[in-house]
Image 1 (cartoon, rainbow, N blue to C red):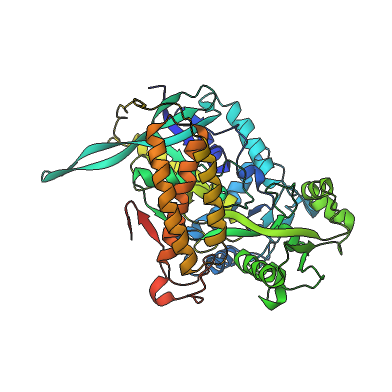
Image 2: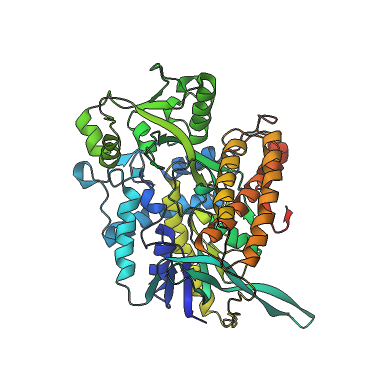
Length: 539
């Protein structure tokens, strides 16, 4: 084997780095990341981290806001765990050196975003994720027990069957994750990483869609690998479309934070008319699914390419100070948000489903954990409350690290099986790269057109037929040619597309982020449950 370690962390966002720092107290850690260490969804998180610090706020209010946003599918025990443990995780970040904005009396400056009943958004201007990632990366880089492998793309998990004794009656076999195969993107050599504990922390899957706020690395790798290995996945029909991404031909996936609306920004149409009051009593502070559908409806009615977010009525200096990154980016495209409205459109943003875990981040495969956007913990239900993602990642990274350390210390913990080395006998270098680029583009377009903000049975059926054909082509290509970074990502977005379509076709109602024309209403009598898939059937 090429690398042997106690803990293998796949992904380098806030969830993976937090886990690594805590797991390193008990063993050696290897962090594998597709590009460089700080290239993650975390770095693109602008708004902040939701946590209770204000005296007029309470854990109960935050829990209720979370449950309301999740539209009936949140697991209350998970919401209570995350909310009640949130402030301590914020304090730990501050102790490490994260600089959050402070207000009067040196208290945290708390913002508000859609769906929140109180000010509870802890932030570092409009670059919160980047600040957290900066500090965690610095800590990881100087830790003596952590090794970092940049430019390595995970191909698949390695699972072995372990014979388990059940008393004196019988024996059975259970799957055990003992590492993963990784492609070194620079040398193009496939390496075997062997580990006692493996953590999936690869982030989300925004690149499954044509328009997304996510960076290019967000191709659903962890969810696809977990599913192929036999882990349960759930609630993949609930894809959150952020209502406001900058609409400009040269602006690639740049998010206009929800915090802009939280600070008084108003959505208007091309004629300058506010429209959110037609869709929700909370107007511009409605939850993201409501706002995204409202914008989608307005665009379909008007035929316009975008709507506009207007905060020009606020003090220009206050706007610049609160949103320095957004202000500078808009100016670079010739838009002065202190004087004119920002053109915006919805874009795929956050995956509320993922690999199913228990309350400690464990999957149903021994030795395999999942945290962050890769995981389905039960916190988000049918729709994520704004800025609950980073606090979930921090709390679950902490819980998973503690549980993994405890699991490794048990007398019954199994030694690492010797995994087989990568076998590419019979494969050749590809001479048809057009297959990769063409299918990549087709998947993203069909997902946007047929499995987007508003769905229908006909659209989903079309998408299913096309993805079946594409999947067959990819499987043939995968087994005949040597793997490449592009092929790995194509294989994963195709897998995610198929799973999203399957989940969406299964749920015959509209709830949270899943809105379908034939079933416009929520139906608690039949669908007040998670959509759980385990290869090869729906449960």
